[in-house]
Length: 74
Image 1 (cartoon, rainbow, N blue to C red):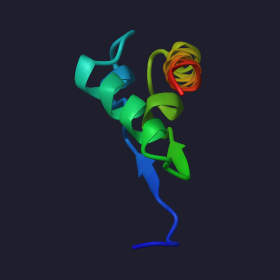
Image 2: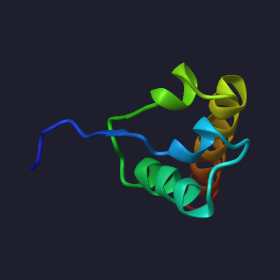
Image 3: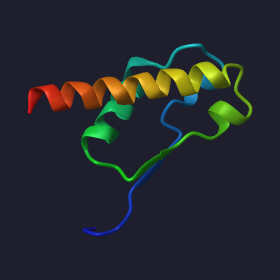
Image 4: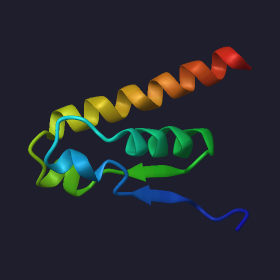
């Protein structure tokens, strides 16, 4: 699989109807960042979800926290 792009989708699916992701979904996002995924795609969560802005904001906060923590540990 080396050299092939990795794109994840539907990582915060519960945010279609809920204001917060489940702990498992937040962990999945964090692990995707730590594992070096090429992209994480938000779809139905922002297209038809009840909280599109909050979804993007929460997603961004998870990613930035993981990155800043990872940098401080190295």
